[in-house]
Image 1 (spheres, rainbow, N blue to C red):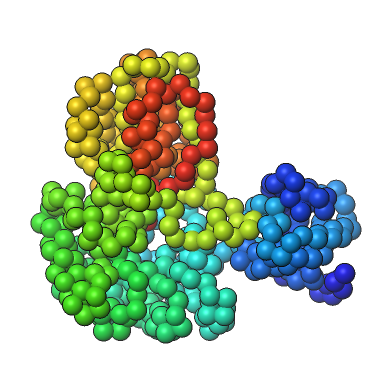
Image 2: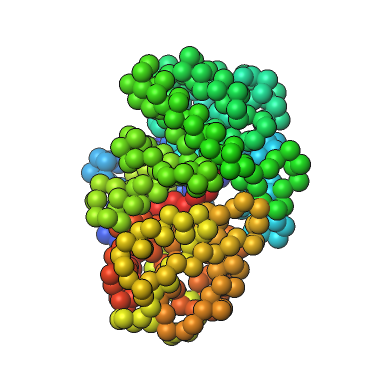
Length: 482
């Protein structure tokens, strides 16, 4: 047995929210609600450290149980590497490292008032980058963080670059540390950590010549980067930044051309394209998407790079294009909760028994961008019983058109004017644990809907079915948020 801890915890303890039947945790007598204060005498800071501690074959767990003042000792004996069988309530047990940048383009600053508090939390935590694929600016990164990342091989990580010119980057982040924090990117790459980059392109700020300079800087200073995504600025009607505006058609086309040109440069220099433009750029520029092969395996599929081509291929039967969650290791880290866009989706729901069965007309609800992607795929089926309903995002307004930011308010308003007896399909990307961003649920909708995983294969199967099957857990995929 490990010696009892001699110092109090400096962090909150992981709280058990689920225990798998037949697991070592169940055999040891752990219960939902238990706080796991110490594991073999150590207080884990986060689920990464926790996963290493519970990987041992013998674990002495000091448990604080609700209603009891003393600590309970639970001894776990299992095979080395066997999962403990516990899901905990959060991924970070000390404190999430919040973002101290004040970017003009930050979408969190553009949320309307009255939304649930958790949506307004900005993180800049490398641990959440590793676990969930969140992008970090590295402005709060430290030597101790670097040592841990390199020692524990926390890879891949996802870094917001925006500009390689120090002054421009500091101005965009509104943080003087933005001018120097990319030194950590160099150190991560030198240490063999896989890093994916992102550039949020803002018209008049870091497009045009600045974007060329940034990509030249990437080639010169960070050639080991795995990929770089160029994604467009999202502007809701709640933005208070007068300098932030959507791209024009011509500006979107210019970004497409720049990326294509730089892909040739990277190919010649490194043997790979490295930089990719988000699908929205081709939609805004009214251009066809690049060929599937040019995406080199869709490494940033979840960030909207090649999502349309992957969807198209999976819809047509290509099993290799049916991509799920790519970044992060929450699914493999024992105990890590699936949160945000990794949270479970529900199969179906809605008010009333008004859903159509076999032979009923089908309507696919999606965002305005998604409707443009789906239109040629649905047309190819030559089925007059299938239609697409684009849902305009009145809730956020502005240029927001991705399915991942649809709200129950807008979906419900559209459904209220639709006939009963039809099958209504909704992408799971707009839900997180059964809730829309405006906190409405499927039961708040005026029509029953079937929630379909946001990939081409799942949609094709839903269109070929009759909607009468029982609810079931479906694959979790990401929406179009950043």
